[in-house]
Image (cartoon, rainbow, N blue to C red; front, side, top):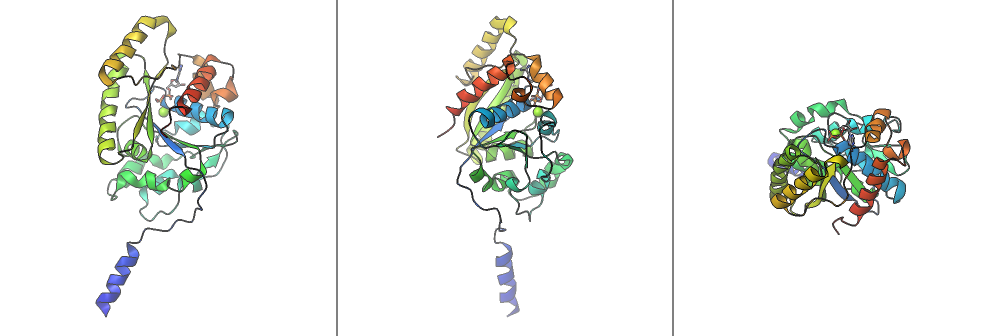
Length: 286
Ligand SMILES: Nc1ncnc2c1ncn2[C@@H]1O[C@H](COP(=O)(O)OP(=O)(O)O)[C@@H](O)[C@H]1O
Ligand SMILES: [Mg+2]
């Protein structure tokens, strides 16, 4: 009967690991903030929208920092609570049963939660390389977590690697920040190709929330319009109506380690991100 015993053990081993996190009663909209380039305002947009939704719309919000540069926690370092655990462990350990909810930490803003800084995220892509179904790992680690939030934002790294693909597979919709310049616009191409691929193979219900133009220089109205037209002619009407102007207060807030509404709530940057947050809520996939 040795053979039967072996078979039984095998069947037992292939059972999905059991999770201990209880289910909540929400069903978060998961938004990936992605762009192929760095420095286009992904993190600023992620952190500002998350704070706006938590502060002004009564939403329970979680930010997952998928970028090994850990800029989310850097941007919120004066407001972030202690505790939490490394996201990389969830992503790389095949025996993991933890959900993101179990490793996140709080912030000074009630209802705003973030994943804590994780230096090992730098090696996570290598650690995931040989995992079966490596693109689905984050989606699985958010399965129950999403029942505890209204909105989950994923700040993606500035490339189309495994971490970004995990973000796109876990997301319901994608927000693409782009600087209003011809060069930046050419960078959107690669991202859209990846979106097509991910949408076709791994996440057919993935939506595009839109392209938000960031660091728009009001003095160059003509070229801003030219950029908008170029984007429109290549990809259709995907540029969102609310733009984020170049506003040094946003950079200062990041340097001070506070969200823009905690740092300078009446600044133009705060005003525009509040507008963007309100506009986007109406565009969430139903
Ligand atoms: N609208 C803006 N006006 C001025 N500076 C900005 C604006 N948005 C972002 N920045 C600054 O530009 C830099 C890059 O922005 P960041 O959001 O970190 O980009 P990414 O996450 O795409 O790399 C940061 O120093 C940030 O403070
Ligand atoms: Mg960033």
